[in-house]
Image 1 (cartoon, rainbow, N blue to C red):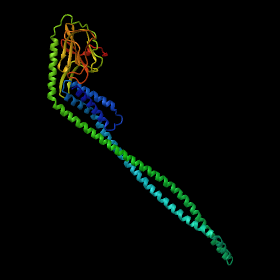
Image 2: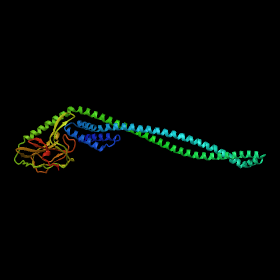
Image 3: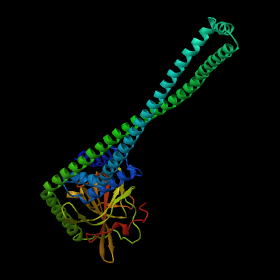
Image 4: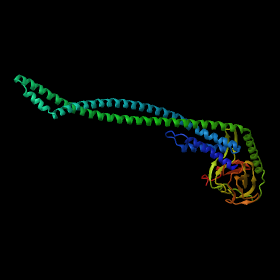
Amino acid sequence: MRSKRRHSRKWALLLFCACLLIAPHPAHADPDDAAERAGKAVQRAEAVLEHATDVARAAAGRLEATTAAMPAAQKKVATSRGVVAAAQTAANTASRKARTAQDAYATVAGRFDQARDRVDGARERVDEIATASYMGGDIARINMLVEARGPADMMQRLGLVDQIMRRQQEDVQELVDARREARTEQDRAGLAKRAAEEAEADARARLGAARSAQAAAERARVALDKLTQTRAAALRVANAQRSAVLARYEAAKAEEARIEAALRGYSLKAGDGQYGGGRLLMPVSGWKSSDYGSRFDPYYRVWQLHAGMDIAAGGGTPIRAAAFGRVIRAGWAGGYGRYTCVSHGRINGVGFQTCYGHQSAILVQVGQFVRRGEVIGRVGTTGASTGNHLHFETRFDGSPRDPANYLPPCLC
């Protein structure tokens, strides 16, 4: 039974943490703080439902955990949708830039091809000039001048030779200019190609980011759906346990009434001790996990009195008498589990008692006198308990009062 209770509590906390970790956390979210809030919510539910059934406590734990996780999960879904939209926009923009860069590269590459064709054409003409020179083209021009028939013919032939020479020079200059232009276009084409490749790589990366964001958004949506389903199932279980829980509450109220009547009817004997006021001894080394007072159960809409202070401590931790007195009750007490009460005499004519619940072991007997600080039992989780702790009570003629008024303020 105890292992089931611990398992239910752990299950609720793990459920919450798992839901936080299913999808990436939104910016500025602290999963540790969220998990701590959920853990405290589960603890509050367990404290309120101390006298409920194990099934009801487990359902309430799930309900508290899922309710605490719901806002973060809803925010995660909304945030992830925004991330998807932004990533898709970036991917579309990058794709357009990549297409523009590819078009620019195609244009520059076309100009380079034209420049290269021009170089090839100029080179062919220069090659023809070189071949003609090698085959005696210069001698042919001289022979043409020698064969002139007169001064007028000579001048005409000189003009023709000059025209041929200028044409050859222009062809050579055309080759030089074409090569320079080709190198320039080649450099531009290289830059355009690199720009296109970088744009394509950026577009692929942006598209991958958009797909990852879409996958994260889907995980967030699935996580929220699981939370919603788990919460709905927990509500169904809690509602199904209503009759059993209310019966438990009535039984707990009846047990409390019996304890009050028994302690109120206890006839003080000489030597029970005289509590002189002042602070009681801290009965166990631990930390306060729950206060004294009336609690409202939001699941079953009933009030119940938590008649003492819960002090969490490890199982088996020694429990010490808070003051000198006589043991007047030591045994099983329903939801209180193993329960001991010690009478400390009267204050202003009213009997004063301290009581110790949920013990794993009772080390004293009824009628036994105990000293202040004497070990009277061991911390446990018997009865209606959700974990190892001491339920410590201060009572006047059986009526419970807040132990915080009588213990050291530091609880040490």
